[in-house]
Every structure is written in structure tokens, then in C-alpha cells.
Image 1 (cartoon, helix red, strand yellow):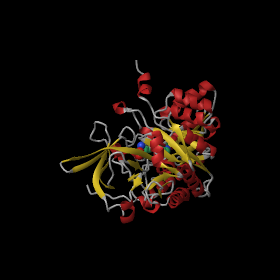
Image 2: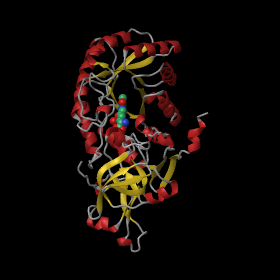
Image 3: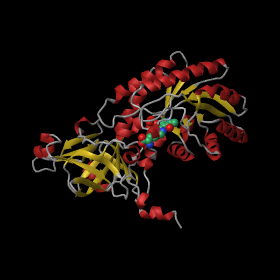
Image 4: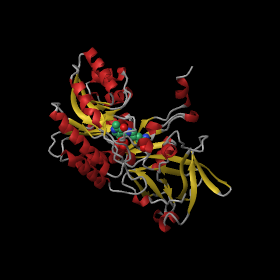
Length: 445
Ligand code: LLP
């Protein structure tokens, strides 16, 4: 594997280096990574590490850019809760008028806890909704059930009948469109467990419309996650648009097309989000011209991914037969993406020394693995990475960790989960306290 170098200068706003007064002479002093107007060294000192830090301004900016990109079409953004489900973040988005995509009864409860009134903008996706979950969503009065099989359709009809409430239904169709991404998060091919084959859809819609407590309202699709080429989104939409015309011809009422989520972010290189999301919007909207539907969008990662970092502290430097390791205090239980998908996350020091600033990161850099304390070889954040030389006790920021970071955290090796802090301007608020071992032991006998 070849070493890859860092380009911290190319990072988006939200997390930027600033000169500090900590040095002897201000001009030659070190520069420190800030989240908005908050010094991240101070944050780590106050709250400990590993620590998730989010920028509220960045979340809002990204939501606004997403919303603006779709200004030409009637649309509702239903933020995908699975990407980051912290209550404070959900509440922040709800205040902006955002809806939500949930995939479990638990996520629905979170959304309702964040904002009671958000139910009418909730879509419920997932291949294995239980009757309890369907019933809870019916009682809450959600906007749309994205049904993924005929069996689920009948389960929903049964639950709705019991409550004498009508369930608004879309079928999630599988458009058989290939999109380049990691095989674990690609969903739009025939071989995947998701949705119903698009060619079976008409027959199923006919069955659904015959059920007393089901009301056909839309069609939904989701082809995968971390997709950076926008063409497959357009292809899937074109197939869905054809289906909508057929369904209307069959006499169904189709008010919604749910396009799912999946727009990728630039983990390895900087990229202008507004341009990316505009291209995505053009690709999705073109096939819908003249259709007169409301477009539902389920972005997760593209809203929250770059708005969060995981701060970790270097415990030990070690060399085994010339191979260098930085052992840090975060591990795969805190951020599993590198271990699970071989995902790349940029890693930068929280404090840059003057030599790194003046002569560039290569002046005093080294090639090293960055690994956690968990007893698995897969517990790494980066392999053979070129990084400015840092010492024991120094802090590193693992970037683009806002999505699928904390939500996938576990207690493996009985490691309590990290705290989460939300920064807004010059203030930082703990939005989830650090777990204690006693929290973990409490549920056991
Ligand atoms: N809608 C549905 C039906 C989904 O299954 C997903 C993601 C989304 C929306 C949101 O997709 P996004 O906009 O965030 O790409 N843990 C993996 C990602 C799993 C995505 C699962 N479904 C990762 O860390 O890359």
C-alpha cells in the first residue's frame, strides 16, 4: 500500500486551523484546530477523549445547500436518522423544517422525542419492520410507509385494520441499477435484499389498492450509499418515472416519489458540496419533469458526515521491526468504518507545530499506522499513512466522522462510548455524556 499524505488546508469550513497565543511569539506559535470559534485542545481537555465534535453551522449550511439545490421541484427532505441520531441534532434539523427517514421503532421514538410534531414528515423504511413498529408508526400518524415486500404489505394492512386507520403506502422498488460503492452498502441490484423487483411492482400495487386500510401514495427507491457519480441516481429515477406513469394509467394516485439517500461525500479530497448537490439535484429532477409529484429525499451522510470529527489522543508510539504505529485511545468500537469497509478518513493533528506550517506537512512527517487499543488486527484508522510527526499525549482529529460514527459505536472490550459535543459559534454543549462502565453493567444481572 502506498503512503497517502494529508492536505488539511483543503478542508471545508467548520474545522480550521488558527494561530494561537500558546506559543512564545504569536507569529511563530503553533496553530490549533478550531471547531467554529472553539479551540479543540480546550474541548479535549474539558471533555476528555475519544470525543465526537460537531459543528452546528456546518450542519445547517449543508442542509440549506441541499434544500436550495432542489428549489425547482416540490420536495421534502427526510434526513436519514441512521446516519447520526443524536436528539439535539434531530431537534436542530426539525426546527429547520426537516422531515425524517426512520428504519426502526427506536428511531421513530427518537424523532418524536426531538419534536412531537415531526411525525407528519416521517417516512419509515426497512426490510424487517415488526408489527409493533408498524403499529407505533400508524398511531404516530407518519407520512409514508416504504413497504419492501408483499408480506409486509399484508402485515401493515392487518395492523392498520386493527386500529381502523389508513396507512399511506409506497412500495420500495428495486430498479436493478448498479452504482459504484462498497458492496456492503450497495442496494439497488436484483441480488440485494431490499425492495421488490420493479417489474413486479404493478401487480403488487393492484393488490395494495384493493386493501381497505391501505392507501397507495407513492413509489420509493434507494440504490445505495456513498455514491459519488450522480448518473445512477438519474437512471433509477427514470425507471421510477416510467413506473409512475404506468401506475397512474392503472388508476393509482401517486403523490410522492421517494428518491432515498446515498449522495456520497469526498473523504479523500476536498470538494465543493454545493456543486456536488446541485449536480445530484439535476440528475434526480430531469426524469421527473412534467410528472407533478412531491420528491422525498433521504440524505444522511451528505448532511452530517463532514460536520463531525472524532478527536483522539496518542497513547503510545511504537515500532515493530521498523514498522511504525501510533496507538490512540479511540478504537473500532468508536468508529468502525475503516475496519468494516476499509474506509478512508483523513487524520490531522489538532496542534500543528510551526515547522509543519512553514515547510508543509512533509517537512517533518512519517509513515505510520494509526491503531486503537482493541484486540483485533482490524482495529485501525489508517494504514501506512503519511502524517506530521506527533508525540505521545498529542491529539489527532479523524475527519468526516459525523455520519455512521457514533451510531455504529459499540461497547466491545467493555469500552464505554465516547461523549458528543455540539459547537455553535463560540459555545460548546455536551449533547451526549460520556458513558461509564457502570452504565454498561447496570443492564446485566
Ligand atoms: N435511505 C435508505 C433507505 C437507506 O438505506 C440509507 C442508508 C439512507 C437513506 C441514507 O443514506 P446516505 O445518504 O447516508 O448515504 N454504515 C455505512 C452506510 C450505510 C447506509 C445504509 N443506508 C457507512 O458507514 O458507510
